Length: 338
Image 1 (cartoon, helix red, strand yellow):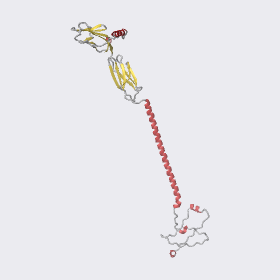
Image 2 (image 1 turned 90 degrees about the horizontal axis):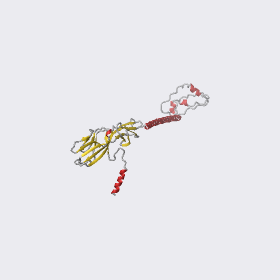
Image 3 (image 1 turned 30 degrees about the vertical axis):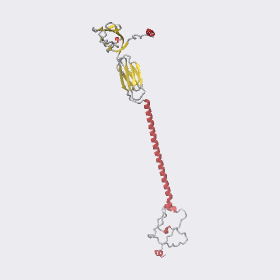
Image 4 (image 1 turned 60 degrees about the vertical axis):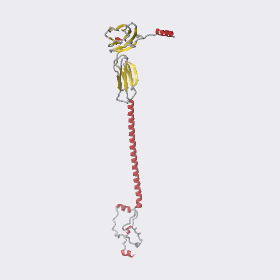
């Protein structure tokens, strides 16, 4: 069983194709341009058994430290510590490459061997967030930095991400818009946050048009309502006036109809003048004796004035009537005796 496993592992190792430019056993390490970098050795053995530590870059010796011997550096660019850590000062782009460390004991036995694939990236500048209210577009841009990855968040929700120095996004919300842009690479990470404020916050063209149309319709409705109410008032007032006029006319007609019946016939001051003149040739009879009326005595009637021309014209219609005779009033003694 163990033999079969070994054969399978050997077969896999034969057909394993390493990545171009990379050692499959190396550890990828990222360094920031113009910054120092420390290469620490993972799994470093106890220092009491370590006698020799050597660092090579692209198979060229760059630093070495031996027990009971001073530190030996090939170049001032590197520093080495007793625990085997290699410090590279002020990284440049040409400092990238394959670094290898070897650790030996006092008998020359290799205790540890590690490889590091160093890659250099430039640190990022702060992301800039800009927006345009007319087309609701927001952009996030990074001026400096190597291979940045940009992520855009809207109210804590990631809406877009991409590799590059610029990304854009179009929003469709009318409410609070807080944008956060995160720019990152292997050596740096920067975050920027902005609140997008537009002059027409919460409004758009269609909403403005709808508000205008609704306001016009409301004003038209109010104008029609006022016109209708005024017209109804005028009609009601006219109807009331007509009813009052009709009632007044009816009252006048009723008064005219009641006048001949309600007006009492006044007793003439002189009874003799109100009597119908006797027919010519007919002998007048003396008046019958009547009881004396209470009240003041009736004075003799004065001479009547001639009628007005209008009355005379009215009286001349038809045959002429004889003039009435003036009857003498009997003496008061005769009345009392009767």
